[in-house]
Image 1 (cartoon, helix red, strand yellow):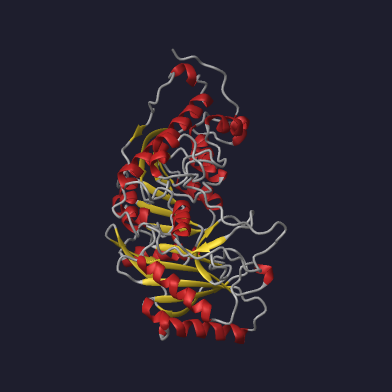
Image 2 (image 1 turned 45 degrees about the vertical axis):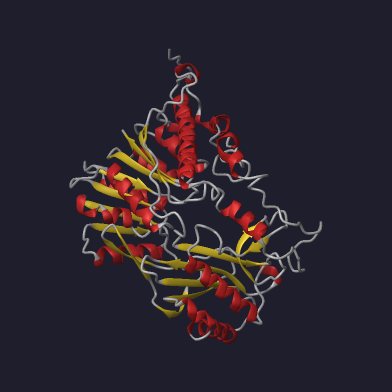
Length: 504
């Protein structure tokens, strides 16, 4: 018997998210690698001896504020490599079939909790409505596996810091945390998700650093120059490398000299073995810089790499977002296309569109594609891809979705049906984007692609589905979650894309 209770006020969202386990607290959800709750009975007991997520290296002495002093932690052996694998790819010890089972159950649990909270908002006492039931109101499809299981990443970012032997010119991935002062950089060529080409470029970058008289930049205010390396590849084997460099107080002449040295190394020196298609150099005084903040300078080669996907030739700039698993991305985008259900009378609104692949792949089935993307280079790529592939019914806008979307929707509210597709970063959608979607009566169908369904993304879903709330300017009819499709783009990790279909 269903018992109705008073509706839960939206201001108590944080409290109820914590109650049902949807708020993004450490160790609360399955994709947190450190001691996931409830997973020990599922698989941890069969995986390893001891705590497989333990990554603590020898800590620095109390009071040490930086890593300027050498820290000799021992040679790089199997234990360091296993520690890194346990952090970056926590499921690597499981068979792929077992990994998929773990991910599916994790997604199912998240959806159960999400539906429970949405029902609470609607005034349903879920403890009385469906006692001890694991049923979902929405249709949860079986998880779609990745076509490629090993070496699937088309983009890798390598850090520079002290290795286990204390050498500050080590290129790899981090173990430990800055907060605890126990950062160790471990070479990553053994990781199952990193392709050999990426590891090769990282290894030669390390060779270059160790022969360079210039110091690496470990802490910005302590000097040093050489920083991280980004490697991008495509299905044809073309390779783009991007080197980040802190200029500190160097003159333009000195900077030019360093560019020429690294260029020579990868063209005629030992690095020529990498056979780079292009090499970029970015001067950066911040942890992350966009092309607009600090331009990528092409030292040699082609300015772009290209990919073939869904019968499209796609251009990819150094700063543009593109799903890191190309073969998996094709499965993901096909799933989105099937759920979108567009037709010749439909406008497809592609929010956070990246290089525009989702919208452009469906352009022939719609009346118009409207894309919104923050990264200017990605929008330029989308426009190039549309022109190259002969697509004339697309329009892409550069800027923040929360600023562009409201005005764009007002101009299109002429009775024509709109299908919206959103594929936000892990931080989720800005609340003004959710408001605009919710309040646009022409949008009856919404496909939401989430790689991290908790925190702000959970708030997005709840605000799309909750009863009308004038205080939050959520005036339109609520959406209803109809279908969910997990798509695995990240083998050996707990992460998974989840495609959600909402209708109203």
